[in-house]
Every structure is written in structure tokens, then in C-alpha cells.
Length: 336
Image (tube, rainbow, N blue to C red; front, side):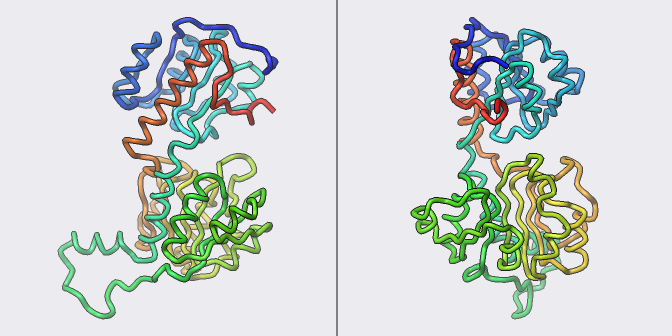
């Protein structure tokens, strides 16, 4: 492993390969700055194409759709020195294997916080109020007009919101939720400073299992890693009360999908709002059949502003690295 205190060698005009089609402003700027290969067709690379790219470049710019495992990293050429990920999550990259090869990994933290929090809040409101069901009813042409007992949902004001993961996005969700009158409960590895807890009116639960029995809506905002795989397991889903709604805009795999489906089908949960999936883009057909599940196509970060800001961070990381310095968004967890 290289000494992180030592400067890096400069890489003039680095060869950069981008695996997906990014915003035009990002691609155009990369073309001005680097020897870049772009994927304007926006078709995800196959494993063989990824392997070839990693042998032929100084910098790889992947996205969440690129599974970069230890096998690919071991096959990478000697020139590959930086994986500048487009996106904040890096669970699709084997960081330990990168560390062994001396390959630096960067991400784009912070720029998608507000966008993802907006999506989570939309689902927190939309699932209990049955907005998706109502929209489908209107489009079906079968709506017969207003009646006192039709399309009844649940208000969210006065309910208890449980947040798993109180980082940037969790805190942004908490701020939004407070404005809608939700009481904030959270579970996090480390407790927030008391001044921040007071600002958010948030109650910390050191034990996740204890929090799960005390909430009405659960929203997940923790990264996917070995510790969080199936974090919301069948045993923990059983701790939730039957009126609870589960919202996930983080990563598929944090929730045990089979257990979630069983609970929804049997009425042991009231509903769910899902923007991410364990095997996306494949979605379990049992979920598609459930009217009380709102599903969106991994679009929590899908704003023009967020995509452009992510591209700017990627470019900054590449330029700093090429100049022989440690990039600002280096994923230090991969070097521990």
C-alpha cells in the first residue's frame, strides 16, 4: 500500500474512460481536459468491456451499475491509478482490492443530499396517503367521483418517524419531516451532538430493535456494506407494528426483500415506498402485484442539478490526482 503522506506522481493528460453517458456539460469539459473515451450510447459495460477499460486507462469513471470486484481489479493494468466514481455510494467497488493494488477511489459526496431527501419525503407522504393508487384510479377511467369512504389513507402529522442512518441525508429528511409534524427518532452508530439533536428535535435509540417497535414510519439512509446487508431482516421486520410503512431510498440489499414481501402480503405491514432494489433493474413480481407499494426507478438523485454537480466533483478529483495530489473526495475507508 502506498504511503498516503507522500505526494503522487503527476499524470499529464491522463487517459480517462467513462462507463455511462453523463451530462453534456460534464462530458464536454472532460473532453477539453483529458484524453477521454465517452460512452454516448449509454449502454452499461459488460464485464469484459470493464476489464478491457481498466487495462487501458489511467482513470476509470464508473457508476453504480458497474460491479468492480476483486477479480476485475486484479486484472487491471499497471497504469490504472484512480477510480473516480460518479456517485456517492461505493458498495459496487471492492475497496480492499483497490487498496492492495494502490488504486485510489473517489466519490461525489454531499451533492445529492437534498435530492434524495426530497424523494424520501415524497414517499413518506405519498405511501400513507395512497397517492400512486389514486393516480392510477384516475387514469383507469373507473373513478366514479368523490365519496366519504373512498381512498382513505393516513395523515402523517403526529406520527413517529424512525430514521436508520443519520448522516447528511438522514438529517435532511429529519428537517423536512419536522415541518410536517412528525416526531423524529433515529438509530445511528454514533449519537449526534446534543445541539444538533435539539435542532432536529430527534431522539436517539442506541439499539435499532428498540426503535423499531416505537415508530409509525421507517426510512432508511445508511450505506450498503457488509454490516448493513439485510439490516432490516425478517426478525426486525417482525418488530414493526402492522400499521408501519417502510421507505427505502438508500440501497437495495439493506432490506430483506423476501421478508418484506411476506410481511406486506400477509398484512403485517401497511405498505412500502421503494426506490432501490436488491437485484435492480429486476424487481420481484410479487412486489409489482401489491397495491400498497409505491415503486420508483432508482430516481432519488435524478435531478439535472445533482448530476451536473456530481460531474464537477468527478472532474475536480481527476484534476487534483493528475497534478500529483490526494483528491479531495478520496474514500479513506478503503485505505484503513
